[in-house]
Image 1 (cartoon, rainbow, N blue to C red):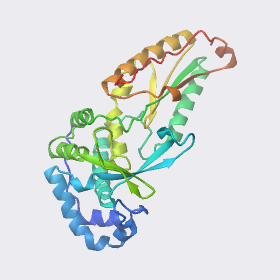
Image 2 (cartoon, helix red, strand yellow):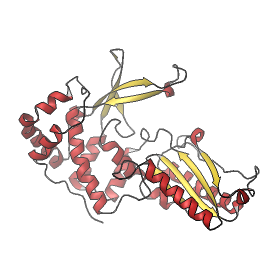
Image 3 (spheres, helix red, strand yellow):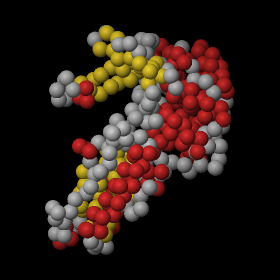
Image 4 (tube, rainbow, N blue to C red):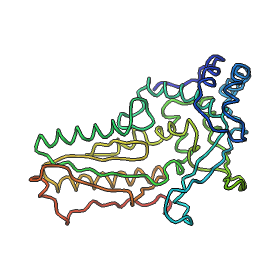
Length: 315
């Protein structure tokens, strides 16, 4: 296994990133991103020194760990908190450093061939389109061979908010992020706080003990590391494709009963994996379907059921 080591950040990198930033909103303390962009030639040198000091000591500045959360109403009863989408705002300078770290870590994960090809989320040249094209192609190939496709769609419940820091840090170490780099990520995840702001009123700050930072640059990449290969590898029969926290299991056979049995076996395996990783399934958003010719689909009947017996890890 290769080992990830931080490379020194250059002033040119910082200046280029700041000047090309697409961030338009004001940061955590109301400092306009546009002002930081205009000032980039004058502050890049000092920021470069701070960034390099951070990665060399393995310490992420405490002052950069706070976030402002604004709930945005989606639909449904306004008294139900699940009907709001939290929008998290962090410091623009903190996001700049995260982007520089992200570039180095992602490049390492690609070189070391660590990221699974089953994941289509948060990766260049990947999207929901590539995930759907892959699924469609497999289904047509199987149908050409006279097979029935069985597909289960799983959705993880509040996946980003329930990531366990201890488990994530162990996985980072396993994948070669060690030494000062590992210390840096431990510091980055620890002692983070957030407060809620509605109509100009602020709540008291609360410490975040689980989850990856919302609104961050590194958050999506850390989530990919968290569910990486050990999810697809826990399956015995089904193929797995993912878009972030949306999971699709699929397999094909001539006998629909065999498909039910194998999918249910792999759902049991996923149940064990979810409990071990302290994740939960959103059963309301979980569905299954069969894809095949009209003649083949006549085998399906209502007596056969997919068993969703995945319990919450904290039940």
